[in-house]
Amino acid sequence: MSASTDADRTLSTLLACPLDRSDLESDGSGWRCRNGGHSFGRGDHGYLELARPGSPVLTIESTSSECAHIQESGGERVYREYLADWLRGPRGGTGLTVLDAGSGTGTAVAEARRDGHCAVGLDMSAVAAYWRAAGRPADQFVVGSVTEMPFADDAFDVAWTLGVMEHVGTTTGHLTLASDWRQQRAEFARELLRVVRPGGRILMACPNKSFPLDIQHGPTDEQTQAPLRARIFDRFGVNVHQVWGSYHLPSYRDVDRWFGRERVRPLPLASYFGFSALERPGVPQPAARAARWWVESMPPALRRTGLNPYVLVEIVV
Ligand SMILES: C[S@@+](CC[C@H](N)C(=O)[O-])C[C@H]1O[C@@H](n2cnc3c(N)ncnc32)[C@H](O)[C@@H]1O
Ligand SMILES: [Zn+2]
Image 1 (cartoon, rainbow, N blue to C red):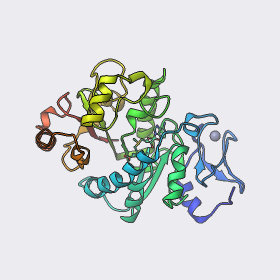
Image 2 (cartoon, rainbow, N blue to C red):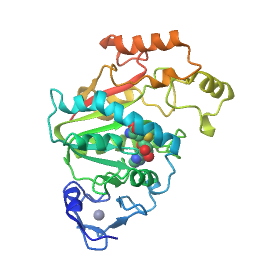
Image 3 (cartoon, rainbow, N blue to C red):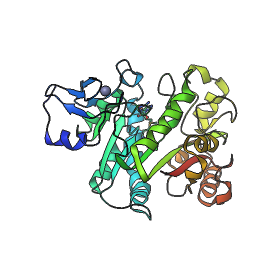
Image 4 (spheres, protein in one colour):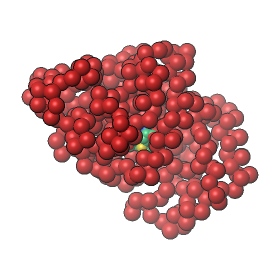
C-alpha cells in the first residue's frame, strides 16, 4: 500500500466512506474513514477499492476482453461525437467535475481529462486490469459500487452512466436478475442524485425495455437462453425480447420513477449512436438504413414510448 501522493489528495476531495459517508483520510498504509473506522486499501492493480467487504463489485467478473475492446473504440467515439458537446452545451461549461459511473475501461474519462475536465471513473474490480493495461492513472479511477458510491454529497457537476443500469442488480454483471434488483437500481439512482450537486446534470443511456429489439445484449445468460433467439441474434445481431414483466432492460417509466418525472428530459438519439453494429455482415442493409432514418428523425412526442429503441435522458438535479 502506497503513502498519500498529491494526486491522491486531489481525488480525496471527492471521496467519502461508501458505508457511512464520512471523510476518508490516508493513514499512510491505507485509507480510513473518520466516523466508523472503516478501512480500505488498493487492489492488485493499484486502484483504491472503496467497497463494503464482500461486495459483489470486488468479485464479479463483469468484463471480457472482447467487451473491453468494444468499450475502447466506442468510448472514444461517443465522447467526441456526443459527450464533449453535452459537457460544453447550454447548461454545461469547462473544467467540470465529472463522474463516469460504470466507466468500463475508462476511455470516456481519459477523453474528458484531455478536454480539461476533472473526470473520475467508478467501476468493479474486474475492470482494474484493463485500467492498468491502458495506463489509466490511479487518481482518476476507483473501484466501488454504483449503489454505494464512495463519493461525498454534491461532489460532481455532472455524471454520466452509459450502458450500466441494465446490468445493476444482476448476479453476474450481465442479464440474470438478483432477487433485490429493483432495490439496487433505486439505490443507484438515489446515489447519482446524491453525488451530483443541485443544478448539476446526469446523462443516462441504455436500450429501452419497451422496444422489442436490442442490438447490444444477446440472450446469453442461462435464464434467458432460448435457441431461436440465440440463432436470430447470431445471424442478424438483434435480440428479440419481451417488453413486459421482469427483464433486465429499463424503460422510460422506470427512469421517471427512479428520478422523478419532472427532472427527466428524454433526448434525441441522433449522434449518440455510431451504427457500427448495423454494419456487420448478415444485417440486411435496407433494414439498417430504415433503422438509422428512424433513430435520426423520430418525433420528440414518441421518445418516452415503445417506439424509441433507446433510453437516453438528461436528469437535472
Ligand atoms: C456494458 S459496460 C459499459 C461500460 C461503459 N460505460 C461504456 O459505455 O463502454 C457496464 C459496466 O458497468 C459496470 N457495473 C455494473 N454494475 C456495477 C456496480 N454495481 N458498480 C460499479 N460498476 C458496475 C460493469 O462492471 C461494466 O464495466
Ligand atoms: Zn466509514
